[in-house]
Image (cartoon, rainbow, N blue to C red; front, side, top):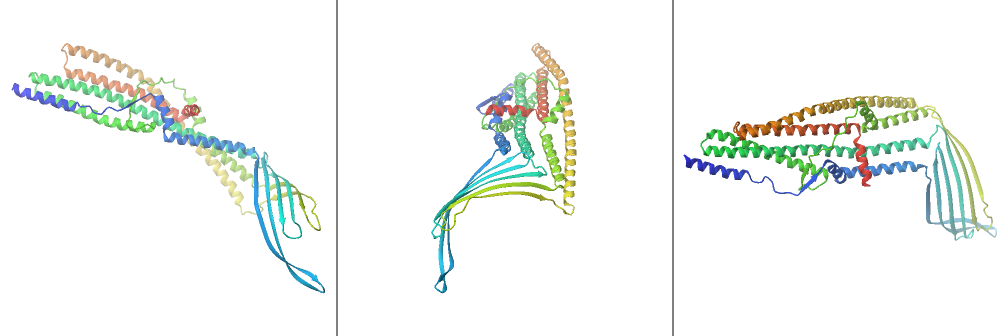
Length: 494
């Protein structure tokens, strides 16, 4: 009987050595806090680089809109032009006329300089300067040069087409494009923060699971010794062994899931997947929860979807005004001055400078459109009303979601002292259980149960604190307040 127990104890020791092999090889580690992880993601991730390109594009669009007041200067240089022709002429010869063919060729080159300027209140000014030089092989003239200078002013009288409206539209579109780019960065920041929280919870759970497994291994070793001493039955030992196997299998499955989550997290940070991230369990302190009304004001002001709706509503209002003005006639005033001068070596007749002046009033009024103008105006009114109703519906939906998150955050804040008190009582109970086990008042199974209860409450406490952080992140994401953080990081990175 004793020899059988000795053989069984030896097999158990071999089994213990096989199962307690290292679960994973040593890997290079990357220690990260929450702020460091966010900075890495906003610097390395592909979505962050795309958002920065979108920010640069939005700034260029804003600059282009503001520079519409700047003049435009164009220079056109014409390559030498060759003209070769043959003309017939009748010349008197005695009492008859004789047909004579005259070969004529000409070479011409020149340049044109144009300066255009759009002014506010529907004014357009164009200045043109055109100079040229030409040569001819005929006897009419050998060569000559000339130029023309013109000034043209066009004023829109009715309806007033002002440049300010187009510039305001460009500014609003650039603001919306910049907001959407910052929204992409804020969304990436939100994803990284949630992934950091999930990975931290998984890592802390793995630490506590490892501790439970070590306690189970220690309990099995004590049970094996008591089995060898004949103090317990083999069935009692098998229960302890099965408990250890269950914990080991669960720990290994959680370890595999943790490695997969770590690879996904590193991919978010733009880091190589062979690293092993080690997260700092110290969470930054939470600010006091703002009042609900202030969060509603921030939601109305900063939410990206509401900002997009406001832009669409402004466009619909602008289109409605345009359709209303289209019912009126279009009246434009056009003034032009042109000075033309040419110095050509004519044999018979020189050319004097000429000054052309023109004043034209253009009137365009659609008299009959078969009701198309009225239908376009009605469609503009419908689009305007649709934008108003859609904006109101979106506002109500977002405010309902905001109230739900605010109540959830307030409930978590009120429940946190209870979780902390339960954890404190579990610590005291575990300390008392150790003292009672040392004095022989309880069994090792009861001690393990007390330690497991403490581990479970540690996980619940960590999860409660992480849930508070997750809810605060959701509030920041909903109200658009997290865009201020990414905007500051973008400016610091420039």
